[in-house]
Structures are given as C-alpha cells and as structure tokens.
Length: 92
Length: 255
Figure (cartoon, each protein chain N blue to C red):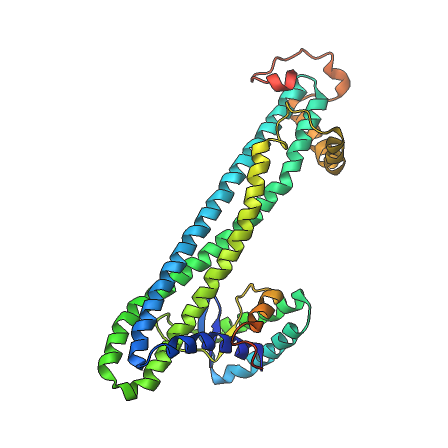
C-alpha cells in the first residue's frame, strides 16, 4: 500500500505492517470527528511516525498514485477539516 | 470513509481534471509535463518569497537586539553617574523588548522550517521533471493510443498527485508568509517610531509604571547584577565614591 505524507513524500507500507497503521488511522479518523486540536496533533504525529518507521520511501521519480494520503505532518485540525470539505473530499 | 482515503480522493480529483483535458492519453503526457514545469517554477518562486521573509525577520531581530544592547549600555552609563532612576527606566524598556525578540525567534524558526520543506519539494519536482521528460517520450513511442489508456493513466495519476501535493505546499507556505508579513509590518512601524527604545523621549507615565510593574522583578535582578559588576556595593556609599567620568558619550543619560 502506497501512503503519501503531504509535503514529505510517498512510502510503501508492506502488507504485514498494515494492521498497525490501520489502528492509528482509526484514531486519526476519530480525532478529525472530534474538536480537540491536541488530540488531533497527537493522532497525526503517531500516524506520520508509523508510516515513516515501517514504510520504504519511494524515489521522487516513481510516478505512482497513492492509496492513502496523510495531511502535512504539522497540519492543524481546522486546516485538515477545511481540506476535507474541499473538492473531492466530500465523498464519504 | 477514512480520512486518509478521503485525502487521497482529493488528490485524485485533481488528477481527473487534468486527464479530462486530453483526448488522446498520450497528449496527457505532454500536458502533465507542462504542468510539472509550471509547478516547479511556482515552488521556486515560493522558496524565494520564504527566503525574503526570513531575511526580513533576521534584520528586525538584529535591529531589536542592537537597541536592547544600547539600552543596556545606557543603564550602565546612568548608574555610573548615580542616576538610578534613568538606569531603571532603560532596563525597563530593555525588558519590554524581550517578548518581541522571542516572538521574532519563533517566527524565524517557523519560516526556516518552511524554507527547508519547500526546498525539498523543489528538489523532488526537479527530479520528476528530469525523469518524466525521458519517460514520456518512451511511453509515447511504445504504446498505441488504445494500450496507452491504462499505462499512461497510471503515470499521469502519479505525476498529478505530486503536483497536487506541491501546489498545496506552496499555498500553505504563501498563507504563512502573508500572516508573517502583516506582523513584520507592525514590527517595522514599532521600530521606526522608537517608542520602545528612545530614552530621550518622554513616555506616557502610566505606561511606564505599567511596564515597570510587569518587569520589576527582572529589573531588580539586573540592577543588582549591574551594581555588582560596577563594584558599587550599597547605594549609601555612592555619594562618597569618586565621581567617575563616563568613558563613553552619554549625553542622553546625564542630561
């Protein structure tokens, strides 16, 4: 599974590591539904760290589309919500 | 749908828009390449903007630090001439500069981090431009229009996604620079007015007292430190000491 971190790059996350990431993804989803910037920042930091830890960074010239995309590693909750409300982001 | 999947949808939506413009998928290769070049130029302009903003902050910090140093010297001079009131005033104003300097430092860190990220983005895009220039010609020569649909679609999706990423990075940097410029403008006015630092200017008495309340602890500590440095043990002994002429021009302080 290819995961992009906005403003950073793309990482290939192996099948075996997907479960761990999935749990963090769910925590991130819950944080976005919530209203707490600190909870969101912690959930985002954990997901970003996990992707960087288990993923293999793709070279810049790989021209591959990603399966998952993480916000900028220092994105705020407000910023992320705004992005998700934009074009292409409203389909749930 | 999860956040990460939705974010991917946002970038894909940008891809689709780009692909829709080309009738032959092979045309989308040239279109993508063109967009990639434009993107690279945008990111480079943005890097230049961030660097300019960083230099402006550095300049302001240097000015402020210079004024803080000047006030420190004025306090020293004033104390040497037994004008504790003036020394106190100078130290109070110096203390008032500290939060401004701290704010500039924070801004500088933010803008430097922003600059590093954009430089990395520009480097990645440059790598993609170089690689895609060759790859698109190979693909055009290899695939017929019918075959090209999938293969080229994949490559263009990938390219388009990183352009979407770069575009968002640039927009984000620009937003931050705009906010910073507004604050920098206010700081320039403050520096130009000299309100914070010019000891010869009579200042609003109430404001001075307010400032002193907030910074009195710092001032007392620094006053004690200065006294120790000058070897003036107690205020009572000041009168008996030889009146030492100030080694520097300190007309403002002695006036």
